[in-house]
Length: 123
Image (cartoon, rainbow, N blue to C red; front, top):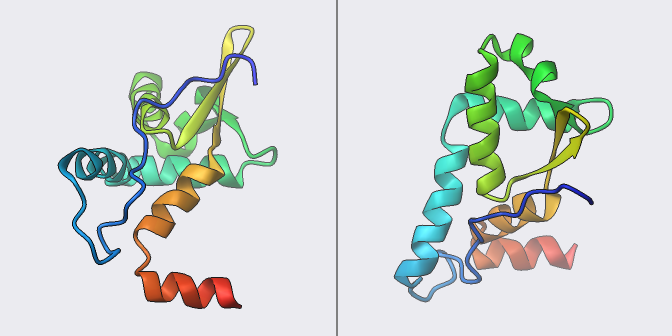
């Protein structure tokens, strides 16, 4: 996709629940992503974008449902984009945001205990 922002926070390869210690760098990367999730407005943004008819939304689509100003919504979108949870595509003067499903799935996988992951995959 042209104009898609690149993530500055990558998820670690080893889960803190894998039964082996997670190293400091991976713990910091995971904490950064989880910190992006840890705000109610950001969770609402992810939900609004995912449920949008085209699976994408611009800042102007998101301000009214959240009851937040454009600069505040833009700030939250930037944090989610930098965490690698959203991708941004510029079209003319507008920027559209969509979820990065693989990033969301990777976080879910990292936080799922290994036994539960094995059970899910066996189905």
